Amino acid sequence: MSRKKKELPLLEGVTIEAVAAEGKALVHVNDLVVFVPFAIPGDVVDLQLTKKKHSYAEAEVVCLVKPSPDRIAPFCQHFGVCGGCKWQMLPYELQLRAKQKQVVDALTRIGKVELPECMPILGSKKTREYRNKLEYGFSNKRWLTKEQIISGEPFERQESVGYHAGGSWDKILPIEECHLMAPINDRLRLTIRDYAYELGLTFFDAREHVGLLRGMMIRLSNEGTLMLLIQFCILTPEEQTQAEALLQFLKETFPELTSLLWVNNTKFNDTFGDLPIQVYSGEDHIFLAMEGLRFKVGAKSFYQTNTEQAYELYSVARRFAGLTGDEVVYDLYTGTGTIANFVARQARRVIGIEYVPEAIEDAKVNSSLNNITNTEFFAGDMKDILTDDFIAEHGRPDIIITDPPRAGMHGDVVKTILRAAPQRIVYVSCNPATQARDLSLLDEAYRVVAIQPVDMFPHTQHVENVVLLEKRAL
Image 1 (cartoon, rainbow, N blue to C red):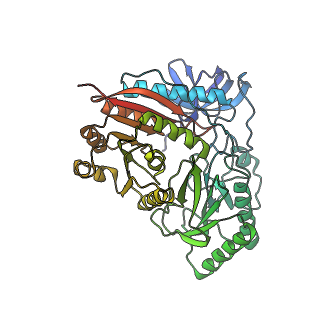
Image 2: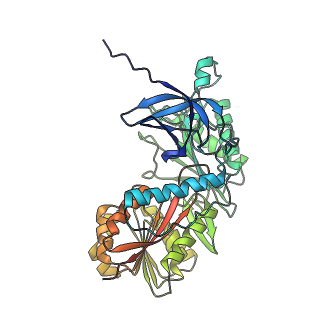
Image 3: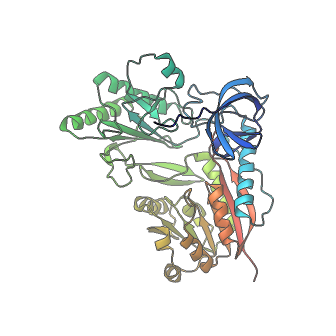
């Protein structure tokens, strides 16, 4: 006989205390810390526990008894289900305060190194329509809210295009509007959806791995150019014909598309970094502009998704680097060479290293495009490229700028940096927790002298942070 699932209690009339990790809020109930999504400090709520461990629990709001005086109305119809912009009900100035605290807490509790006072976070000038890239998925199974399930309301179509709702890998929440990018993103997505409905195109089935329409990616340049990539799963000649007809329709319907691309992905995951990108019309790239520089960005390229705030972030990194024109700079995890080219005119030489070969080719093009001649770029795994022999061949860095992925730097990379002994390290991070871990590893030879958080993603819990480290005196 199976064990009966224990019923978790309802907590009535509790007052949310603070913002916590992962965009959740928290409240202490006796000795239990309860984490709650879609709540803000000051809310009086009834909570239903959904998970309970020894010292913490998770819960959902079943009744907002009394809203916090700070609570504001969310602006998106999908708020609370989509999960992408969890802080819409929190005024932006309070979002910034929470992000600043997140950075300080991570560096203090995890890093456990001596820290200067953290500078005030730099807020984003745009809090809506700030992204230059969005990705959507297609599915033959739509995500249903609890209310929709309870109502039993039938739907004309299960096929949907939108985002994966939290906890779902095979269902897609239909998105009618998204405020993260200019309205062109809605027009493209809904036009493709309606075309597919009308002609009976199949949407991807993540369990069976069939279905023509699998995903789409939009990139929008601050120069006005527009990229659309459609991810198909083409298994038959008929599906190939249908894909080509859709692409022709999009070319004719959206003359503003300067880059119309497609990829055939029949793999068991949605990533296409290892697949060839096909150009249907236009170019295979767009350009984004920053401080008189132009950067070529392809379908596989990494570029900060908040274009205007990226300039603020890179300006902080350049200022922290303290360049005089005579330094050798290593730019680790260089991507398409944005930081490398951004600082090159104030340095003697810049060496960029990046894992993705296509991004490195774009970095070289970006240097050529901007008449920058003092950069060199190398492709490969950072721990394999950045070695003592590499440094001996290319010169010891005076300054290292590092902007690793969320996982932070590999331990071997940290050890090589310590042996290279640059005078200064500028550490740009999208994850203050792993940044803090790496700072503790560097602490034996470097001290933190400046901390500057930068908000790139309004209405989310994510925050970038730039730290300046200087070599300790012997």
